[in-house]
Image (cartoon, rainbow, N blue to C red; front, side, top):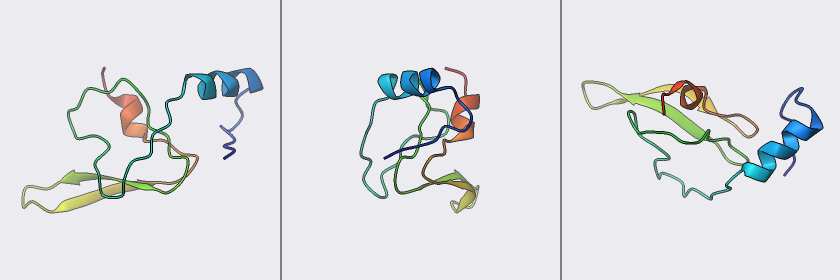
Amino acid sequence: MKISFGSQKPACREDIWNSAIVRDIPKGKPLCREGDDRENLPMVISGSLRVFKSAENDREVTLYPVSPGSCCVLSAAWDT
């Protein structure tokens, strides 16, 4: 699969791919949970994921979807 990485220079794109760890996450399996320590930045190559927060009444509130070629911006903001 080819992902554009926006306006990144070819060398930067190559660095991203060379350091990437590709994983197949089964549908319905959490990728991470709020408060987890993150050492990486999840990027969707195919499929999609949903970023949500659990409300006090045990319901899930969707914050935003993440589609192919995108990453979870909240992961980038977490302290590691």
